[in-house]
Image (cartoon, rainbow, N blue to C red; front, side, top):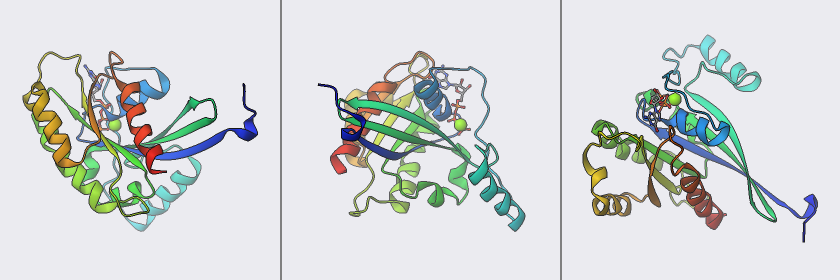
Length: 210
Ligand code: GTP
Ligand code: MG
């Protein structure tokens, strides 16, 4: 039977997408939300100078514009989860260079889940995963104090030049268990591989906590 709108449950979830510069966060979101990929790299921009004037501009931007001036961008994905559940995923695309800034606490506020992204062709982006994960865990928790459910994305799996641990499936599983990742997926924003699957996995975890 078809349920009326009144009987449908709607959830709004804030989900963070974090990871090193150029790992593919923006590309994954664009693919997932807009079914689009571009080879051209434009970094999600971070404002370095925070003076009172800039803070004022940032606040105005947040309120009135979808800004490119601050180290975060937003996208909304609406998922018809099942017959009586609609999920609105608000994806927060955090600039890779933000790890060196101090705005992450503000961006992380009230999030209920996260993706940490690295680039399988660059081992340095994998080494940074634990830094992002500990930044996340130290700055935001669920209302009951537990860490946010987090899914690790090994991105650019369409590339042949794989670097390091990602070649070792067992080691990756072990890594996820140790660091508290719910799961990991090899993804490609370019070829549209595993992005829907990874999102479904994270949403399932979020729903279990809700
Ligand atoms: P920052 O905003 O600087 O933190 O970077 P980002 O993580 O948002 O990376 P972005 O999505 O801008 O991607 C960086 C570069 O990698 C771009 O040139 C993309 O086209 C490329 N890229 C992203 N995902 C993939 C992928 O799955 N496969 C391949 N081959 N290239 C990708
Ligand atoms: Mg970006």
